[in-house]
Image 1 (cartoon, rainbow, N blue to C red):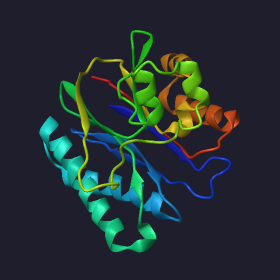
Image 2: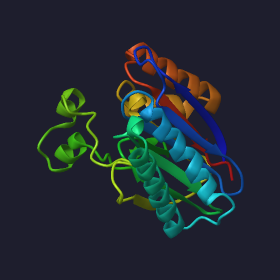
Image 3: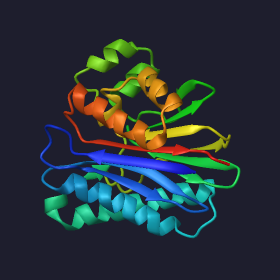
Image 4: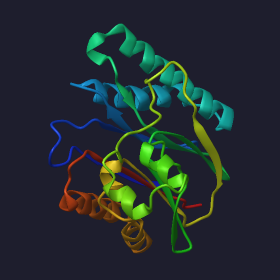
Length: 235
């Protein structure tokens, strides 16, 4: 796969609590973690997540069980770390990753960072938001338009490190040459619509597309950290 990635603290936040996982190779591992917590706890959680998951899965052949188990193991390590250090109390992070095999991709997901697939000039969100607003949307209690303005749209219902046990969403995706995948934190999708993502990603080379998406998120407000990984299936 061909990959481009970007991360930025945005225009308002004092630090960047997002972290990228870009581990290319035969079994490439790509993802975004968006940390939460006071002081520096959020960036500790997100950086622990990407570093530890990369180590846990390094050299392994992709499987659903290994991916789920790896994320569960990382969750426990982050949870135990925040229990040991009161300065890190309450820290947690989202985690959305793609793990590449010869003929498929595995998705692992916790939180409200997102994964999209661009195929045949259409864009689909392939992750499910673990958030209060996501649940309200799925239950039909609010509309997509109301979700964009909802006061609790940033309240997530699952995060690595928040508790000893975690439920991890996984999915198996077929690989098709020319497909593009976008993994991003809410700092991107809050300001860039799926339609705009599709327009940029369907006609623009990866590095240029990454720059354009980042610029649009910053120009749209940049009130949060912004992170993205774009991966294109080349064979």
